[in-house]
Image (cartoon, rainbow over the protein chains, first blue to last red):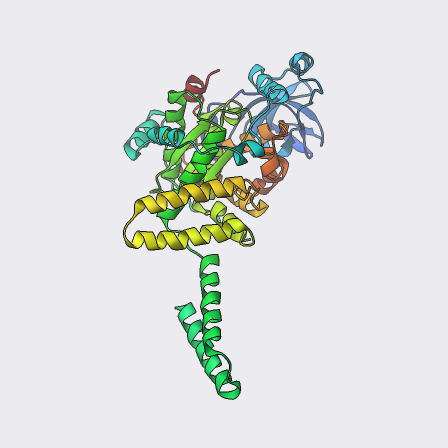
Length: 174
Length: 290
């Protein structure tokens, strides 16, 4: 009980992120909760494949709007389908589709970028000439321990002692 | 020790055989030595210095194809997040180096020895430092677990391995005369070789990716970040498409939905230990942009 209360307090302390107004679906029947805690009031039961609009994220819960109600759903009870891809490289059609679905501006832009601009290919890397000057430049930006510690304090990052849970025991042996 | 015993055994066997049938004793010894050498190369334990030299060689090659993004504030920022995370890994003392490369392709790459390259295409799709930490910690976990080295070594059939082994042997000789230049040169040529023949660009085993996801969320949580940062990144990736480059995270990793499914039962175990998990959105926005 104390643990649950503590979890609720900690979750409440998280600044909820309203990134992408992503459009997702429930991947199983799940409860829409009044807050991001398992013991909070259940507002509704959402059947599998219910469309939801993401309002905020943080911790193991996602704040969504579903069927005119807003509330909290467990992160892993949602799925997100791949973005619709346009066959043309011009972004006009996709952009308007994005707005119609209510996607966040930033996300929409990021998605469009993949349709027009060619990225780094396997061949590019295979055929590249090594660039030791770039390597040296990159290494000039290294942070030392004191710099990293200052940086962490600025954001109030609190260290925690956590052992790797035994679940991760699947060693990557080949 | 084992190879010495093996050698001795071979000699005894050779003696026994020779007494009976007059076999060429010298060839048996040579065969035993050859087998011993092959075994040693296949299980060669890279020293940290060798790892770093190889990683530098790989990174220099990679940067030749995708240069650093010309944004010193961003480069310094990513190094601070990365170093803080790496300090909470099982290998805090490697010369951890992080770089944002200027390409639209969405991915991140870990080199042996502690160099991590992340594409600008990935960084600009993130929305908080916790998400960046999720991506970087996944790469740090690959370095900690030496996944890339294992992949390179498991490719024994390739010419690359033969060259690498040869290089290591000659390097070992060079270093007996304490020659760090020899090591550096070996790393540079081995790095280029592993990029050119595509060994390094091959996807890792799925089991390694899942392991890196899990150890990554632990490292992020130890560092004070919301461990669900990686989960948010995977949700974002689930909605993106490969750019067809062959190097997109969607080409080189298991499907985001599969990775999320692997994390579902694991996350509560990590969450329990998290102290005051932070998203750190404002600082991220200030550096990366709105």
